Length: 239
Image 1 (cartoon, helix red, strand yellow):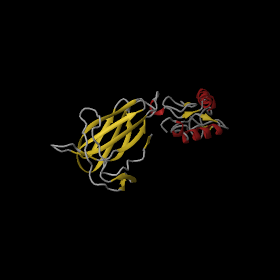
Image 2: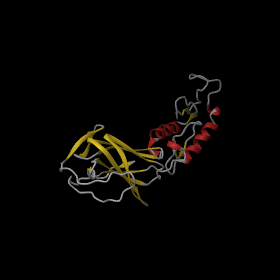
Image 3: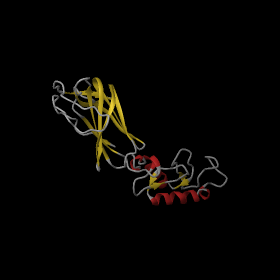
Image 4: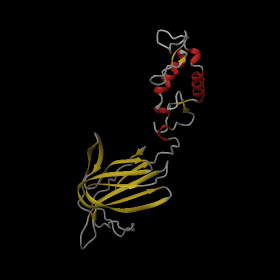
């Protein structure tokens, strides 16, 4: 889950001189003429981007890596990227210029919020580079998922109506489901019936916890299985 912070709204013209930065970063001098902020559509949404500086338009996590992507409102010669998290000082890195750019933070800590800043720079041969204000955003790394994307929230377990059934339910429902599987043969009509060999005895219906689930259960149990399926995504850690 990512949370965007307020974008930098400092006017252009701010002077950045003599900052201590990591090796390879572009050291900035006097900025250009001030420019107002404007709403720029990104991915169908209106994202507030200040004119004259990069605009972070994508910040997400893939595995244990956080990826930040941005676009420039001009052809910048280079970009500076800074990132930090609680307990770690801010570090700065230089990224090649252009109209777009990206940066990756690897091996992130689960549940920790990372703050990323980007600025565009125009380099000069005989003087300090001219750089924009910083564009800033933040994201909180996902928690550990010991059982992968189907990890249930606390208080829920996999139903296991079949081996691959990973719908999250209460422990009592999983116990009841296992008992239904055990009693399945005794609840089928001997010799079959109108619905073939899986026809249920009177008073029982197919559970339908998944496509093809013909275990015979009470009508209340089938309704519960349908309700659990509908609530499945809300009971997973990732949702």
